[in-house]
Image (cartoon, rainbow, N blue to C red; front, side, top):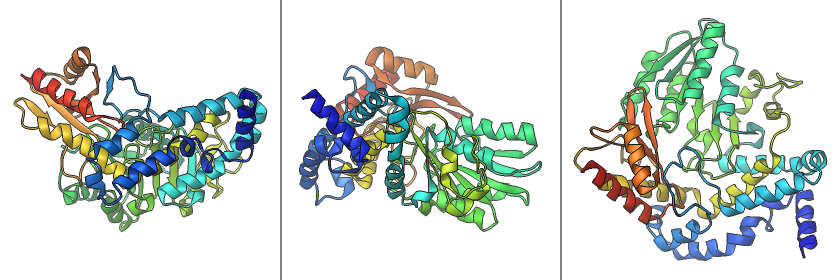
Length: 430
């Protein structure tokens, strides 16, 4: 029996079946159950379906999270569904039977089908999608790959992710580019206020605008398309950090009107930890230098950005099962559920004495992430109180003008866990 199973898997891998066929682990384990559960809510709007606990209990059972730990830091790294873990384990076992053969000649052949699947999810062309390890790698590829010279300006914000900020600062130190940072006091429920701030910072030397689609610290959703349209009207390119938006928000990358986009797939898409994706508008690929070496660094082939040497091919191929799982739920339905979970707890504590929310509850300006603080407590104090007494894992944020604890549920989060969070905040505040 074991031998037959092994032969079956080898045959799947060799023929590029795996996650891209009806024999995928997702289809074997969940397809029928998801279809039955989905049929029950087929007539509901995504917002209404977000509140159907019977449906979401089916999704919750597909994860293997520790019941003794309430993980509300999915904005950092999300757990993968069981089928994604199993896919990685199977490919890893196969790779270790003969690494140089199975990695390069069998598993690596699955990259092109995966590229096509990611492109479909992103609403992009396969020739615009590069597969890598995380947002930092994607965005640093663009930041270091563009031909800037001394005096050229880049506009970002103090609320962007530190790894991107440091990349621009290194270019400023080494090459003399000018890195300008705006600062925002979130939450903001006015697109024009944000767009105008970027517009007023532009000078004739501005070459790039860096926008974080969903602010890592507090979940503010930025008006990316409006910023991009404004910048393009002035001949300026736009790079988008989509680390927290891709796999969460129901959108297509080209609709953002940007030129470059990078994301991590191990957040809300729930792909294997250490997987990412970069999108470059096709007519821009040729001008960007790859971050690592390539024999044709000025080619227009997106694959020049994938010269990473030996890396985990099992992790890459596990992405396919994560996409299957995501599509089994549906992008809009998933977005509305996670927003509902955020609103479920946040709306119940927003009027508690001494408690402050740092995130808008307007659906246009937030989705999963919400920052919370309690007067008289540092973020570290509140984080520790939540964990030590209630085993609630969230993350304290003390960055620039932001001081709060970031709370981020995911589709596997049951309402009972959020009820416990609400009680914990009420008790600590009292």
